[in-house]
Length: 358
Ligand code: DAH
Image 1: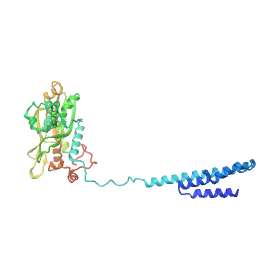
Image 2: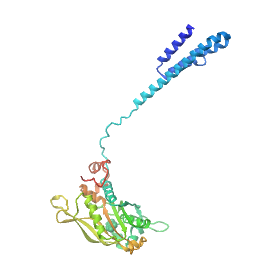
Image 3: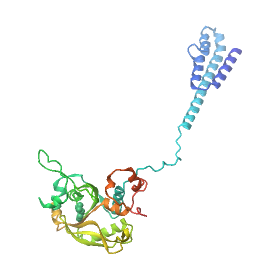
Image 4: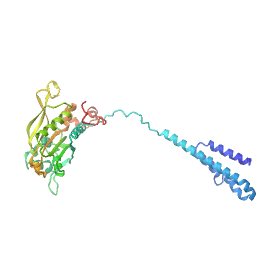
């Protein structure tokens, strides 16, 4: 029995001293494996006399049980320690500061577009979209451009190759106004939408780029008149430039899709090399607008006797330049990271109706 006590003591000590799960496994094989010491003792019981077996059996079985549970306990201990050290090693320190600001940023056009959407959203406008590649019907015909009328040429339209089957020539939309048509044809009034997006014209100089951005607006309801248009646009422009009010004039103009049509100017002072809004005797054109032409309503399936509306359209890039003091239009689309680092906005500066200049 002394041998067994010694064997148990040695095994328990060795198990306690094992440093890895592999060492524990080695000890298990040496004691309880096929040719392990304890397995040998258990096998030896077969050759014992019944009396001897009755005496030694429980001792050997007890030894096996204790060694087995010591092995299990040590293994669990080592596994827990290993998990703990892995957790320590793989810990992510969330308190690390964010990376310093990189060169990139949100493009002023996109920032201003979001600002506009947010201001109009506050006034109950939804956002509507249409395709960049338009057909003649949506871009011109439904908007009351007469067929073959020079107005179509005035837009410096990019025409696509004619369709081999139909001969139809699609266009890159020259304005966001076709979204008015799409909206009137797919929704039932009352309608209150703004349509932001890319527009294209064959034009390139200091103040024009072949691709630029517009936000279109459309309101269709019963009893809509110029007063609604005036309030909506004056309120928008004042909020956009963060002014208490705006000194505006509506100058008669011509657009085929509105009657009457107007351009909205705001009072400004350009003397002294800086631009001051709401001061001086100068006027700056801000946008085009008007009451939706009855022909447009009819082309979209609405009865002009029942529904009226107003519409407006403005250049986003130009208004971004004005608001944030960007002097030149062309670098806006050069994709130069230095320009973006200077004029771009942090992605965290979420545009809102309460933010921007201030
Ligand atoms: N589509 C016009 C343009 O690109 C802008 C415009 C003027 C839109 C008057 C309108 C409007 O909806 O009523 O020049």
